[in-house]
Length: 404
Image: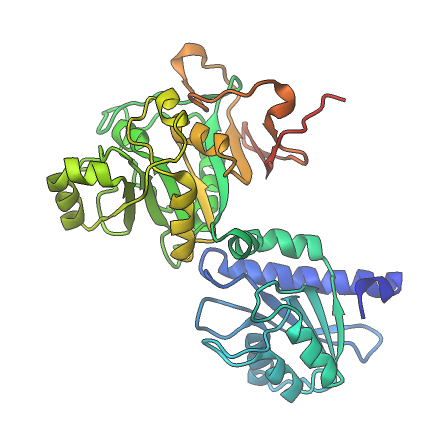
């Protein structure tokens, strides 16, 4: 059965239950890679009013899948799963990986009906889960809140399609599109923030939901950032991998990022020119990895970077390390290069209500478009008020912009 076969009332009820499953999946945001986020809800629909019996989610790779977690929670409170309905945001698996087949657990539990948010394009699943359930006479509905489910797992879907993470352009800018000027490492005045506390807190929430945070060497040299998740309300289950794009290997061993949990992507040429620096960085705990130079002959000279690594290969390398969702925090040269290469998938721009003029730093450096119609843009931007600031976010589309 598909969503189109349902009556209006049934669709509304199923959508409400699926939203509960989507909320449950978010509990593990930032902790499940390379697995997707998945939530599940078990509902008793035998009476006049549906009753939610148990809610589960997938907490991380190697741990119980959402369906099994929900069944376990129901058992712990003495509940009975026979004849009940299971709502799950992603198609149940029908293969043995780190855990057993979810389909067999569902069938053994006597679940009567399974409502699925979206099919799983993973070749190990890809329709096999729904088919196995139907073979066992379980009613299956697929496609409830599918758009929301796909958005929740956009990093997983990008990774399966292209072998690289979903990449977010993140920046705090002024009304005239400028970044805050650097105050310099160790400056007594501290960081020069444009945005207020609410926006900075949301930025840390974005970090917490990503597998990696990316910056260029210029940002490290100018600001010496730590790039950690700092949320007073909760501690993340893990810190994102910190990644520095440093084709010339300029990052000094004294930098905060020259420590464990940091990956520095450089070039073979730079490793040959600075072997002592590479060794010092490794002794501090950073991992230093060479990436081939860009195959484009014109990009590096225009950016003024003599040793420019191939950004496509760099992101595929991150994909090989199970990075599904990555947040790039600049600076302007790296933002411009990634946008020029067509590697940004979405944007999260925190806009402060001030004009910086020449005091600020351009958001995009060494980047131009031939005309407005070729610009990257947000076709369905979401705007959120955060104190005095605005957060503008959404999918980035390249070209096809129209003022009509």
